[in-house]
Image (cartoon, rainbow, N blue to C red):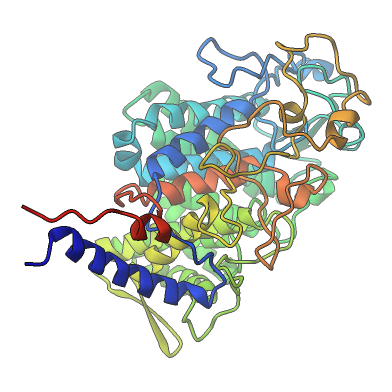
Length: 512
């Protein structure tokens, strides 16, 4: 009689052989077959990252202990309170447009995957991360026609390498008004507050109502005083125009309020909708289309153009599609841009995850991509491949999330992380004093757990150097989109990575 152990090994070896064969063409490491990851752990760390990006007075509940209070006088030149919010990346400037996009994506995850995130024990932490951003957006909207959009001089800030706790660069204020509009920033802020109002519904009703009310005010401001944000700020310039933000915010307002006027708005302006190749802080078309496609399948048949457009987006990046436009690397990673590519990977995964879920819940098997048919389960499997790549299933065998796995970036392009904590080195590190830490080849003294970096190049190679900001700098919007993408996989069963040598050297024990 063949032992149970031998049967198990034979079956497993067959599985490994097939997996290795399927991966070999993609340049994946042959010595490891990664079947799944601890997505709950990845989710928790992705959310924890936001505590390391906080600006302002830190609460007693702060878990990232190497950070301290910072920028406690923000807004003072205009006699407004702009303390709080997030630093968007590895510098010490606060930009409301990408910050609002971050909040929208976090809120989308909280709305779409509430039960999964709750079961993982991370829903309260996620709501806390959202609220740190929404509180700041509320403060920034100081009148019906005013939104502060930036705190800090970006040019001066980039000439310094110093901890946020020490920064002495000008905290210059930028704002949009009816005379100097920026519909992209106001529209995204409206989207963030309306999405967050759903996340807090039934949890903090008063706060939810405040968010929705301010969202309506911001949308009115963005729509009535139309103008591109490029005229109001030298950073985070708009390339896609503001129509995408207006559709995106109107879609969220309809979802949050149920007010038919917002539905009529997106129906009336569906001519604005276009097929985009990315969802990002600049381009919101795929996000708006995904939201409105869900409404279409819920019975709103006037929204069919949004279905067509989002499916064109999906077909542009799904392997096997006859209308493929976005290629993957040899190792299997979506590759859109050479700089900070993982931001586009994580946001694409959010769209793919939500849309595959919409298809499945509507009893639709998949979508037609030219001559190819792509099933909903294929779409979700592709998301899993991208998340797994980020977490370590790649030619470098490296996790691109700090603190996840055994090998990950150590030289983060991040000021606060790269300089000893103010609690370990209380003396001030001035503007120019920190460059010695920047130039050091040593690992960052503070591990910024959960930070996802810009990622590898088009050849799946990654050079862990602090100076290479396009590869080693984390951003809030990379992590925000990842939260939803990994939450969609929480129902997957984790299996430890298996090394072939482990299998070969496992002693055989006859079953009784």
